[in-house]
Image 1 (cartoon, helix red, strand yellow):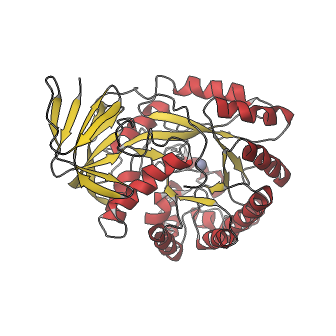
Image 2 (cartoon, rainbow, N blue to C red):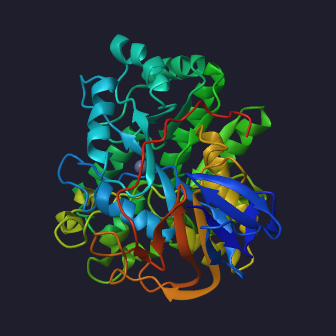
Image 3 (tube, rainbow, N blue to C red):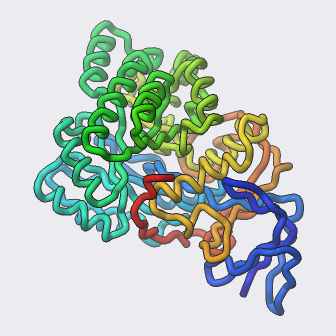
Length: 460
Ligand SMILES: [Zn+2]
């Protein structure tokens, strides 16, 4: 049975038009003015609503163990949060054990996600070491639909040497893959934590001081110099400061292709939250940390000007009670990460579009189309056109609300955005033509499917 959405305004990264849309068998079959209903069509009146391509979050950690504790959410609960918020696809991170193979790691992540996930999903493959075995598996990953890779310059259990990064870059370039790196100088982070904790500076106030902007910017600069040597277009995940973006601009000026991702928490929260009463600051411990208001303003300017390509969340949820509290007496023991997959679209609409900072077209580019292009999913995803998968958010611009842990779908016991007022809301969310969420409630769960991705569009 086909579904006919009548009277809505279809928005893409390049414009908007009031058109009807018919979907059937997972695909958008027809778009046009005044489409007539066929016998048996389910007709939905969407006048006054925007039809947006399902949002894609290219940076989630739905289910992981950080070496000490497991995330509060998993593929089931995080993905339910995703769809009620309008996110129909995510790219998570598959991370092997040291000494393990990429093939086994991929199988393990499939096991975790299959039949438990309510949005479509893929993974970036983490390269936490580099050897003959791993190198030989890079082409295999591309064949398996995993066309992007992740490396770390911080976190002792995940990071590699610069030499390993360089060799991986050459291998990824050969396969036309995409590399993203967590850019922080791990040695400097360790030194600063040792110094601060050694001096008795253990409260959350010191978390951002242990990871200052120079620690990030130095790693970004080094990464981009290595990418220049390797001739590889690269992605920077969760870029958070002016100094890092200045480094990106220098690289672009010398002709390098660099993709930049930032996250909503760097745009709507700031480092004063680490000085909240009691242990409240623990709720906001993530890396890189929340930054100054000046950094925040600079990031917004560059979202507007287009220097920032995409917005994803780095969703990684740990409960405040019992988990964040592991660092009650030492900020460096607080599990890093913030929940965010559920709230990214509504935050970007409320604080980006509704405030007049960005257009809705720009929001579609940042949260959907550019991500689909960058990560080999376009035009199956990222755009509403005939032949594309029918991942559609019916967005009500009149919606009003307040973000609260009490009403969220995800399982974690708090939200870093508690009490923030919102404008606009996802009224209906369709995943490949099926209604999966409506007015903040899951209608049909566990329909998510693995996305077999093609290679990146390096030019987008
Ligand atoms: Zn991350």
